[in-house]
Length: 90
Image (cartoon, rainbow, N blue to C red; front, side, top):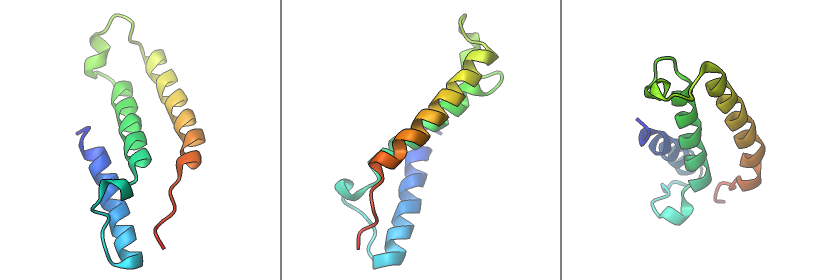
């Protein structure tokens, strides 16, 4: 499931680029790598916060830690993402 997150981001980006200029971004240097990475981090954080996740077996895990992780990750990613935004190719 974790691998699906960057793949879905790439597919959405490719569809958007293809709609604007007709050719999908096949070269890795044209991929939205930051967005793909951030989506993976967000998904992992969400999975960490689910009740009865494998993380709940850890001694230090609690619902409060999971909630704090979600709040911190969401805030950090939301603040940092605009700094790395890549414009669509013209």
